[in-house]
Length: 78
Image 1 (cartoon, rainbow, N blue to C red):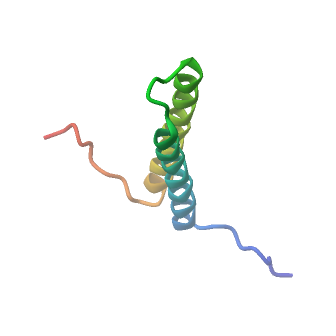
Image 2 (image 1 turned 180 degrees about the vertical axis):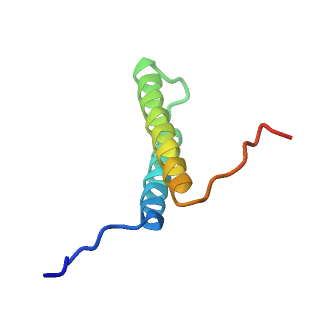
């Protein structure tokens, strides 16, 4: 019997994690668009959570890209 849903290849993992990272970035943008002029403690906490999620997903995207052979040299190195 054949699998109806074959396992995702490395490229699909990169696409999936890139889409998740894009969504997280959009969530940060949406938050910043509705941010009041004088942010309160709850706003700062929400922003911190959104940025942490975005960074985690960025790291997952990069790990998936590395696995798919898309390793980039460090931008810090000349």
